[in-house]
Amino acid sequence: MAINESAIRRSYERRLFLIVSILFALLILIGFGPTYYFKEFFHAPALASVLVHIHGVLMTAWVALFVAQVWLIRSKSIKVHQKLGYTAIGLAVAIVIVGFFVAVAAAKNGAASTPPGIPRLSFLAVPLFDLVMFVILFSAAIYYRKQAANHKRLMILTALNFLPPALGRIHLSVFDALGPLAFFGIPAILAIMLVIYDTRRNDRLNKVFLAGAMLLIASYPLRLAISGTDAWTAFAAWLTTWAA
Image (cartoon, rainbow, N blue to C red; front, top):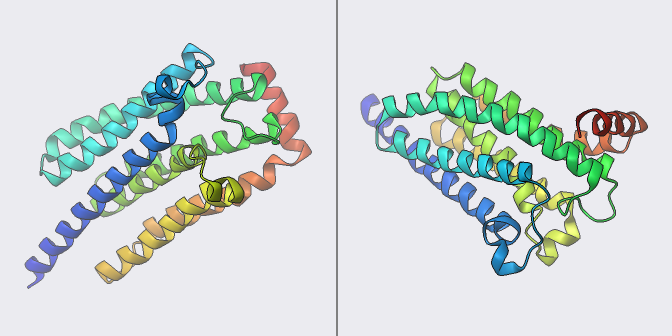
């Protein structure tokens, strides 16, 4: 009976992670389609710099790698999955470095991604917190790489962490009216739903999953609160002088 329950649990997890990976890829494609992937069809302006294009390539590679890793686990290609994990570490480092300089350059020179009416230096808190949370969650996933239950759930959270930039680019009337409540609220709700569903499905709470989800959710109001302070504005101005 225990063996059957274990097999059922593994089957459930594979389905869940497959759904999450497909949803992640679709939302990224929809969000960034008009301004990046299909920009020629939407007459979008040219990218601000080569560095922005490199950032887009790196993030696309991350999404593709995330989907591939889920598929490899689903097909029981564990050794290939583990070898690709080293590639993921190198890619993550590149994403953080390039993403940092792209965010700072946008704060200094302006960018289409900055919401209208929001000071560029204030908005810099949003992408920088994305990078900080990515470092924390992905580092934790590496730390727990030999504990599959924790590792997989932390990787789900890294995907949720990258959703706000895509959601913020989906211009629906509801999204535009809600603003941060939409592009931060949706990942927060998804994180809560996943923790609850995972707990009910497995009859136990994964504490690492809960801690990671709560940290991610807490980062949303925190970055908004910090972004409006004089201290942050001064720090952001220093960054644009030093790094951009």
